[in-house]
Image (cartoon, rainbow, N blue to C red):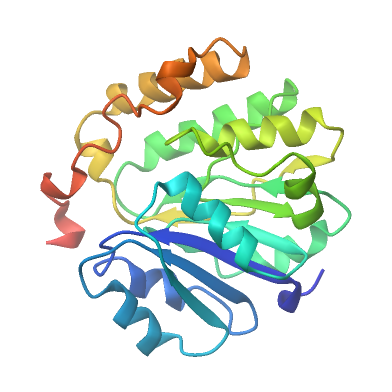
Length: 242
Protein backbone atom coordinates (compact mmCIF):
# COMPACT_ATOMS: atom_id res chain seq x y z
CA UNK A 1 0.00 0.00 0.00
CA UNK A 2 1.15 3.55 -0.70
CA UNK A 3 -0.53 6.90 -0.14
CA UNK A 4 -1.93 7.10 -3.68
CA UNK A 5 -3.75 3.81 -3.05
CA UNK A 6 -5.85 5.49 -0.32
CA UNK A 7 -9.06 7.51 -0.45
CA UNK A 8 -10.38 9.19 2.69
CA UNK A 9 -14.19 9.22 2.80
CA UNK A 10 -15.81 11.80 5.06
CA UNK A 11 -19.46 12.88 5.41
CA UNK A 12 -19.97 16.52 6.42
CA UNK A 13 -22.87 18.53 7.76
CA UNK A 14 -22.14 22.08 8.95
CA UNK A 15 -18.52 21.40 9.90
CA UNK A 16 -17.06 24.83 9.11
CA UNK A 17 -15.55 25.05 12.62
CA UNK A 18 -13.91 21.60 12.34
CA UNK A 19 -12.99 20.99 8.73
CA UNK A 20 -9.80 23.07 8.60
CA UNK A 21 -8.12 21.03 11.33
CA UNK A 22 -9.18 17.82 9.60
CA UNK A 23 -7.84 18.92 6.21
CA UNK A 24 -4.48 20.06 7.56
CA UNK A 25 -3.87 16.56 8.96
CA UNK A 26 -4.18 14.90 5.52
CA UNK A 27 -1.11 14.21 3.37
CA UNK A 28 -1.27 15.79 -0.07
CA UNK A 29 -0.91 12.40 -1.79
CA UNK A 30 -4.10 10.78 -0.46
CA UNK A 31 -7.42 11.26 -2.22
CA UNK A 32 -10.35 12.86 -0.41
CA UNK A 33 -14.03 12.29 -1.14
CA UNK A 34 -16.42 14.49 0.83
CA UNK A 35 -20.16 13.81 0.86
CA UNK A 36 -21.66 17.07 2.04
CA UNK A 37 -25.09 17.94 3.44
CA UNK A 38 -24.19 21.38 4.82
CA UNK A 39 -25.96 24.70 4.71
CA UNK A 40 -22.89 26.55 5.99
CA UNK A 41 -19.54 27.28 4.33
CA UNK A 42 -18.05 23.79 4.77
CA UNK A 43 -17.77 22.96 1.03
CA UNK A 44 -16.25 26.36 0.22
CA UNK A 45 -13.61 25.91 2.91
CA UNK A 46 -12.75 22.45 1.57
CA UNK A 47 -12.35 23.68 -2.00
CA UNK A 48 -10.19 26.59 -0.85
CA UNK A 49 -7.90 24.66 1.51
CA UNK A 50 -7.57 21.44 -0.52
CA UNK A 51 -8.12 22.06 -4.24
CA UNK A 52 -6.16 18.98 -5.39
CA UNK A 53 -7.09 15.29 -5.08
CA UNK A 54 -10.43 16.32 -3.59
CA UNK A 55 -14.01 15.71 -4.69
CA UNK A 56 -17.02 17.23 -2.94
CA UNK A 57 -20.34 15.49 -3.58
CA UNK A 58 -23.62 17.02 -2.53
CA UNK A 59 -26.07 14.59 -0.92
CA UNK A 60 -28.35 15.46 2.03
CA UNK A 61 -28.60 11.85 3.15
CA UNK A 62 -27.89 9.81 6.28
CA UNK A 63 -24.31 9.35 7.41
CA UNK A 64 -24.47 5.67 6.42
CA UNK A 65 -25.60 6.40 2.88
CA UNK A 66 -23.01 9.18 2.65
CA UNK A 67 -20.21 6.77 3.56
CA UNK A 68 -21.42 4.29 0.96
CA UNK A 69 -21.82 6.95 -1.72
CA UNK A 70 -18.29 8.18 -1.11
CA UNK A 71 -16.94 4.64 -1.28
CA UNK A 72 -18.73 4.02 -4.56
CA UNK A 73 -17.38 7.21 -6.10
CA UNK A 74 -13.74 6.59 -5.16
CA UNK A 75 -11.49 4.34 -7.23
CA UNK A 76 -8.58 3.42 -4.94
CA UNK A 77 -7.85 0.00 -3.45
CA UNK A 78 -8.09 1.26 0.14
CA UNK A 79 -10.81 3.37 1.76
CA UNK A 80 -10.34 5.23 5.03
CA UNK A 81 -13.61 6.23 6.67
CA UNK A 82 -13.35 9.24 8.97
CA UNK A 83 -15.35 12.11 10.44
CA UNK A 84 -14.80 15.83 9.97
CA UNK A 85 -14.40 16.49 13.70
CA UNK A 86 -11.14 14.53 14.01
CA UNK A 87 -7.55 14.95 12.85
CA UNK A 88 -5.04 12.24 11.97
CA UNK A 89 -1.88 11.59 13.96
CA UNK A 90 1.15 12.87 12.04
CA UNK A 91 2.35 9.25 11.52
CA UNK A 92 -1.09 7.80 10.80
CA UNK A 93 -0.81 7.21 7.08
CA UNK A 94 2.78 5.99 7.22
CA UNK A 95 1.72 3.42 9.81
CA UNK A 96 -1.38 2.50 7.83
CA UNK A 97 0.77 1.64 4.80
CA UNK A 98 2.35 -1.17 6.84
CA UNK A 99 -0.99 -3.00 6.90
CA UNK A 100 -1.24 -3.77 3.21
CA UNK A 101 -1.49 -7.51 3.91
CA UNK A 102 -4.73 -7.05 5.88
CA UNK A 103 -8.25 -6.51 4.55
CA UNK A 104 -9.37 -4.03 7.21
CA UNK A 105 -7.62 -2.17 10.01
CA UNK A 106 -8.86 0.26 12.62
CA UNK A 107 -7.48 2.27 15.52
CA UNK A 108 -8.54 4.37 18.51
CA UNK A 109 -9.85 7.89 18.87
CA UNK A 110 -8.07 10.02 21.45
CA UNK A 111 -8.23 13.64 22.61
CA UNK A 112 -5.50 16.20 23.21
CA UNK A 113 -7.48 18.21 25.76
CA UNK A 114 -11.01 17.36 26.94
CA UNK A 115 -12.38 13.94 27.92
CA UNK A 116 -8.94 12.37 27.62
CA UNK A 117 -9.72 9.70 30.23
CA UNK A 118 -12.99 8.77 28.51
CA UNK A 119 -11.27 8.25 25.16
CA UNK A 120 -8.44 6.32 26.82
CA UNK A 121 -10.93 3.89 28.36
CA UNK A 122 -12.70 3.51 25.01
CA UNK A 123 -9.35 2.55 23.48
CA UNK A 124 -8.82 -0.03 26.23
CA UNK A 125 -12.26 -1.41 25.47
CA UNK A 126 -11.43 -1.65 21.76
CA UNK A 127 -8.23 -3.52 22.53
CA UNK A 128 -9.98 -5.96 24.88
CA UNK A 129 -12.82 -6.55 22.43
CA UNK A 130 -10.33 -7.24 19.66
CA UNK A 131 -8.50 -9.76 21.87
CA UNK A 132 -11.84 -11.49 22.44
CA UNK A 133 -12.36 -11.78 18.69
CA UNK A 134 -14.94 -9.00 18.30
CA UNK A 135 -13.61 -6.00 16.34
CA UNK A 136 -14.83 -2.69 17.78
CA UNK A 137 -14.28 -0.22 14.95
CA UNK A 138 -15.40 3.38 14.77
CA UNK A 139 -16.37 5.26 11.62
CA UNK A 140 -13.94 7.98 12.67
CA UNK A 141 -11.02 5.62 12.11
CA UNK A 142 -11.62 2.64 9.86
CA UNK A 143 -9.64 1.51 6.80
CA UNK A 144 -11.11 -1.19 4.55
CA UNK A 145 -9.86 -2.74 1.36
CA UNK A 146 -12.35 -2.05 -1.44
CA UNK A 147 -12.80 -5.69 -2.41
CA UNK A 148 -13.69 -6.61 1.20
CA UNK A 149 -16.25 -3.81 1.42
CA UNK A 150 -17.85 -4.83 -1.87
CA UNK A 151 -17.85 -8.52 -0.95
CA UNK A 152 -20.08 -7.92 2.08
CA UNK A 153 -22.39 -5.47 0.29
CA UNK A 154 -21.09 -2.28 1.88
CA UNK A 155 -22.75 -0.42 4.74
CA UNK A 156 -26.27 -1.36 5.75
CA UNK A 157 -28.38 1.54 4.37
CA UNK A 158 -31.12 0.93 6.96
CA UNK A 159 -28.82 1.92 9.83
CA UNK A 160 -28.42 5.57 10.78
CA UNK A 161 -25.77 4.94 13.46
CA UNK A 162 -23.46 2.10 14.55
CA UNK A 163 -23.06 1.33 10.86
CA UNK A 164 -19.29 1.17 11.36
CA UNK A 165 -19.39 -1.62 13.97
CA UNK A 166 -21.97 -3.60 12.03
CA UNK A 167 -19.88 -3.41 8.84
CA UNK A 168 -16.64 -4.64 10.39
CA UNK A 169 -18.41 -7.62 11.99
CA UNK A 170 -19.68 -8.70 8.57
CA UNK A 171 -16.22 -8.20 7.07
CA UNK A 172 -14.66 -10.48 9.68
CA UNK A 173 -17.45 -13.07 9.51
CA UNK A 174 -16.91 -13.25 5.75
CA UNK A 175 -13.38 -14.48 6.41
CA UNK A 176 -11.42 -11.30 5.77
CA UNK A 177 -8.40 -10.44 7.91
CA UNK A 178 -9.15 -7.61 10.36
CA UNK A 179 -6.53 -5.92 12.57
CA UNK A 180 -6.61 -3.43 15.44
CA UNK A 181 -3.59 -1.12 15.64
CA UNK A 182 -3.44 1.12 18.75
CA UNK A 183 -0.86 3.33 17.04
CA UNK A 184 -3.33 4.35 14.29
CA UNK A 185 -4.64 7.32 16.24
CA UNK A 186 -7.11 10.04 15.33
CA UNK A 187 -7.84 12.94 17.67
CA UNK A 188 -11.34 14.19 18.47
CA UNK A 189 -11.87 17.95 18.47
CA UNK A 190 -15.62 18.31 18.92
CA UNK A 191 -17.18 16.72 21.99
CA UNK A 192 -20.76 17.98 21.81
CA UNK A 193 -22.32 14.55 22.28
CA UNK A 194 -20.16 13.94 25.32
CA UNK A 195 -21.33 17.22 26.87
CA UNK A 196 -24.82 15.73 26.76
CA UNK A 197 -23.64 12.94 29.05
CA UNK A 198 -20.88 10.33 29.01
CA UNK A 199 -23.15 7.61 30.35
CA UNK A 200 -25.87 8.44 27.88
CA UNK A 201 -23.51 8.04 24.93
CA UNK A 202 -21.81 4.94 26.35
CA UNK A 203 -25.03 3.08 27.18
CA UNK A 204 -26.51 4.02 23.81
CA UNK A 205 -23.52 2.51 21.97
CA UNK A 206 -23.26 -0.62 24.14
CA UNK A 207 -26.95 -1.52 23.94
CA UNK A 208 -27.29 -0.91 20.21
CA UNK A 209 -24.06 -2.73 19.37
CA UNK A 210 -25.05 -5.71 21.52
CA UNK A 211 -28.39 -5.98 19.72
CA UNK A 212 -26.77 -5.66 16.30
CA UNK A 213 -24.00 -8.13 17.05
CA UNK A 214 -26.50 -10.74 18.30
CA UNK A 215 -28.79 -10.04 15.33
CA UNK A 216 -31.51 -9.14 17.84
CA UNK A 217 -32.23 -5.60 16.66
CA UNK A 218 -35.92 -5.34 15.63
CA UNK A 219 -36.17 -4.16 12.04
CA UNK A 220 -38.32 -1.18 13.03
CA UNK A 221 -35.45 0.11 15.24
CA UNK A 222 -32.72 -0.07 12.62
CA UNK A 223 -33.74 3.24 11.06
CA UNK A 224 -33.95 5.04 14.41
CA UNK A 225 -30.94 6.63 16.10
CA UNK A 226 -32.64 6.70 19.55
CA UNK A 227 -31.88 10.43 19.75
CA UNK A 228 -28.17 10.14 18.92
CA UNK A 229 -28.25 12.66 16.07
CA UNK A 230 -30.91 14.93 17.55
CA UNK A 231 -29.84 18.51 16.94
CA UNK A 232 -26.35 18.46 18.48
CA UNK A 233 -25.73 21.85 16.80
CA UNK A 234 -28.06 23.42 19.35
CA UNK A 235 -25.95 22.24 22.27
CA UNK A 236 -23.28 24.61 23.60
CA UNK A 237 -19.83 24.07 22.18
CA UNK A 238 -16.90 23.40 24.44
CA UNK A 239 -14.28 26.00 25.33
CA UNK A 240 -12.08 25.11 22.36
CA UNK A 241 -14.88 25.95 19.92
CA UNK A 242 -16.20 29.18 21.41
